[in-house]
Image (cartoon, rainbow, N blue to C red; front, side):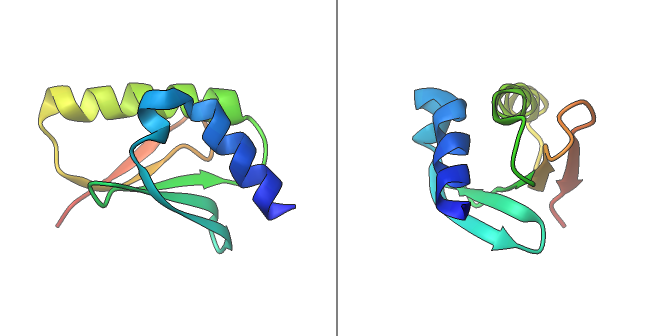
Length: 88
């Protein structure tokens, strides 16, 4: 069920990251997708590995902040190989 998957994904994010989620897209072409308050899109992908995806997302977001990067998409659908797409 898409709603249950979305709830599990949100729970796995923890409070700090969860508070940055503006919107969830369930069942789209890329699977579960989050849109953060700053407009960054996060491809969570198909159901499963929620804790790993949440942990990796936090690490990628910290890296983006350190690098002062401008990105439009973070893909953690394969948590062992996250990817980012630059803005512009």
